[in-house]
Amino acid sequence: MSRNTKINLLLLVVVAALAVLPLALGLGDHKKEPFTGSDGEAESAITEIEPDYKPWFSPLYEPPSGEIESALFSLQAALGAGVLAYYFGLHRGRRQGEARALAQRETAKAPAGSGAEEV
Image 1 (tube, helix red, strand yellow):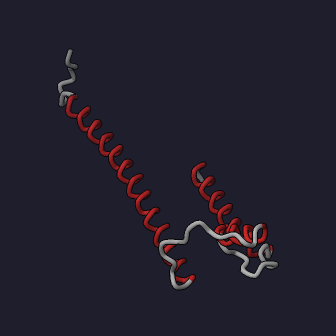
Image 2: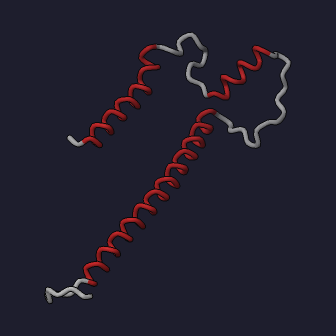
Image 3: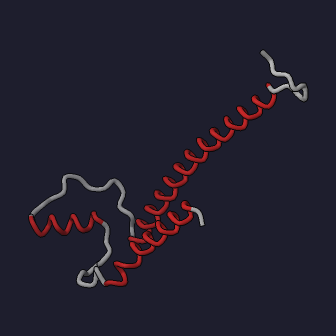
């Protein structure tokens, strides 16, 4: 097994552990909604500190349900991942194309079977 394969497997195990351990250890059992986002946690912390706090502004669009909000968040993440994958794929393809063109240029410069080098 190559070094890269070992590193990739280790990273996969770490990511799986980060996803499973909070559930297995019951880290959110004492809360009403155990795994809410940081926005909800911040809102509850602010209302505990300052009960009369009024937000400065409201969201431009409030989804009608949590499922739609999750779907929009997932769509945003998928679009971002797609843009990043396109960017990295495009640049990798350009590098590979440049390497192929350079290799073809080098083989075209070499004389075909004469055995003599140009001076």
